[in-house]
Length: 232
Ligand code: ADE
Image (cartoon, rainbow, N blue to C red; front, side, top):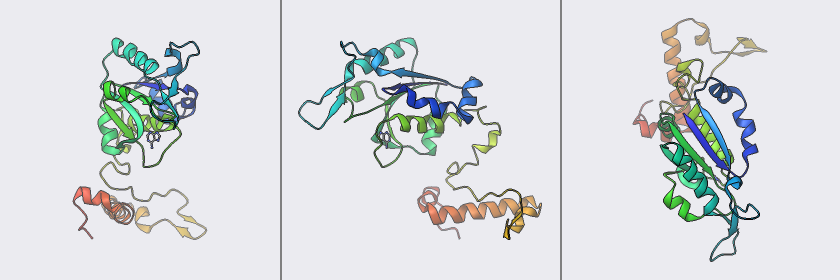
């Protein structure tokens, strides 16, 4: 997979992509991440990337020219499956959406700032608009990092234990059951007996019960999607 990210703040991606699973995915060549500074594409004398919005005094709007030129250059080099704009008014990111995007080959992520971007970019270039939650961030960079992380960890060969992405919370519309490690008794706080029993079948049953209990308490909406709300 190849992910191209257009941003006014390329430095913001140094942290999230330089550690742990994403770093390993890049090293293993499962994903290429290319960060583009939108300012580098500005044709104006002072490398401007924003201007006053027509018909309002509410703030600055990201200009069409630098973003359009960057898109055109990338699209002349390869085909993209989706051109995604991170925006609070996009479709809410969830696990099925991350699963679908992890099967794609080439993605562009556009990070917005200020009051927004010239609407003509959304009309003519963007194929998907995604929000990572019902709150407003200062810009799309953190949202793009979250989206990229949720996708990249699902690419085959990225996680060491291939099955662990499948047992994640949400993957089967259930939250994960609690997990424990040694010691089995910490100052009297004990690990549930069943997990020490060695009885695999009973342990799986306990884990499924706990996953259902947790989902019913914390995210009943997930069970509704799954058609399981009646189960006690
Ligand atoms: N940009 C600002 N807020 C955002 C959000 N919640 N999701 C995606 N992009 C955003």
